[in-house]
Length: 267
Image (cartoon, rainbow, N blue to C red; front, side):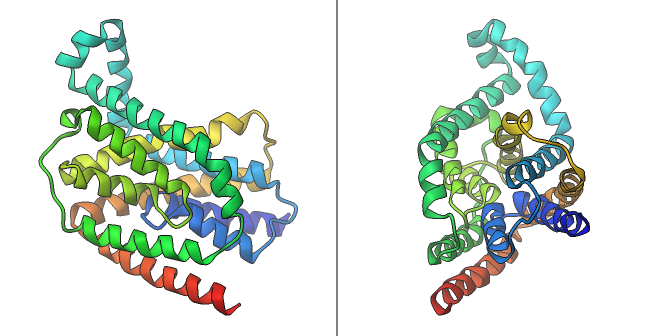
């Protein structure tokens, strides 16, 4: 039990940091699970509570935007009129559009990706190198659009690119911030959209499986650790994005990617 709680602290901290920092949580979890067997911890239950912790973190971090979107739900009473007049309702519709695209692609791709990347491979290192390029490029882009001005085509493309985060080594926050900037959004708006877009994705990863899981001490520790570290990671991501310092994470991902490629080929 003690070892499981220590493992929960480690995994909760790792999930909280890597879920939001642009370094790919799936890639890091894959590395760690390849280094250690989960032992007596229920793997599925454990992962579920890790996701719930990060869900709580992002909801708390963007609660003002979340409240605005909840109020915008009333716009579905008269959607056409609301879409023209209410910027928050437009953002809500764009978020739903991006999420649906990601969800549909995820249904078709997840089983294939899980089968291909069930263990650490050189391809994971390659994706980390791609992520490094994306982060370096993000520091050199700046747009003018706000979230409510993005339009359906940009929302569709953001949902499409977000699905790439299913690949271990590709960061969801990294790819969505990059996509927003690439599509002409202001830096702060691309960041806000990325934060809000993470809510349904993270909820889908945790809430759908919650009723099937048992609550034990390691799971509770994992949940609160991932939430606490996640809040801290969100603050770091906000600062580094707005000050154009994502390249710091790009350097880390480049080193990690090269290390994985060399390590897999040598072992």
